[in-house]
Image (tube, rainbow, N blue to C red; front, side, top):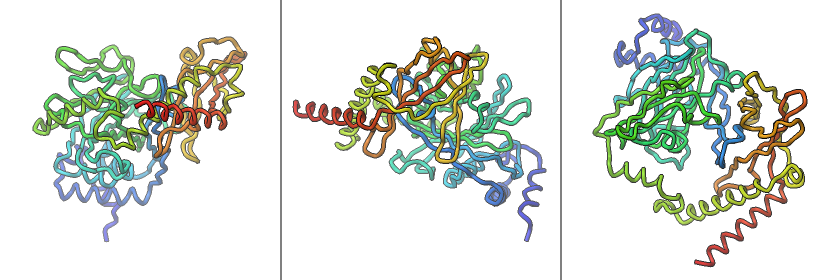
Length: 435
């Protein structure tokens, strides 16, 4: 029997043109099988955690509002080409159905690159179809679109590992965009998408996923990767929409990465009626959408009322009453750098630690030592029954005499949370009785 590692080495020493353009279908299949075999023997995957919570007003607690992020440990397997191909990235993410889709005849293999100050971004490919992901929630719309991007440093240095403070200062946001639609609103966050990131041999790979938007194929679809905004999400300074032509373009004076690629989707996939329904869903409250069940509409009303009460609760919090109404869930000392940026740590699952950054000027309106600055935004999680006050979290900050920042995370005390939940139920019953 041939040693699969020896066979992979032979392919690894072949010319470094993309396999889709230089290898036969049989060779590509053999390469995929070999690569999958090697990876299954030498790598250890660890899922860093999944967060998907509602953020009110502003994302003050990045630990609560972190986008979907899967990060795997460094892998010592031999890469056959400069980049992993999309199917291999899907394999790295333990998503065999998506890997299979990227090997299908309808998948787009692109390998287009754009270079910025210190970074190169490459759009490797895209795939779409019915239920091609093995990792999406069961209640997600079954028709999805995916794209894979690679990010590397042009100086040859590896990208920092995910669980390091250095990585916290290098946040990037991948997304799809649509011609004619404002990218600040119609991006991965606004269109309920998600992304996963993995790293191999110092190169970072982003897999972005969302409900299929190929019904806009006749208008134009883009894929982008930009230096993230203040809260790790869309950066409003990265792209712009020309109101006359509908073109979404990069802002040339943007200080960072703002790659933007045209996705060559077949125009025949366009569906005007479906596209209009998609846009209508953005212009009507969720509770008014006709495709929701009665139970789902009731849950949405409950969620909105609870968020309103939580907002009012936070507005009434003061340095004098915060300890009577709330409990500290986390406290840490942070050291700002010369730019006023400080890094804090947060848990991911039970075994991992992530890092994120904040700016002193954004978090402390009063920098007098000892004065508590309470944030104006909060995060709230929930379960299958909707949001719950017990999951509410918000932050507060205090400047110390030595120039460090004490960062606190708070949650409502159990008795307070129960009272607000009870008030929410009472308000909903009262509203229903008036109909």
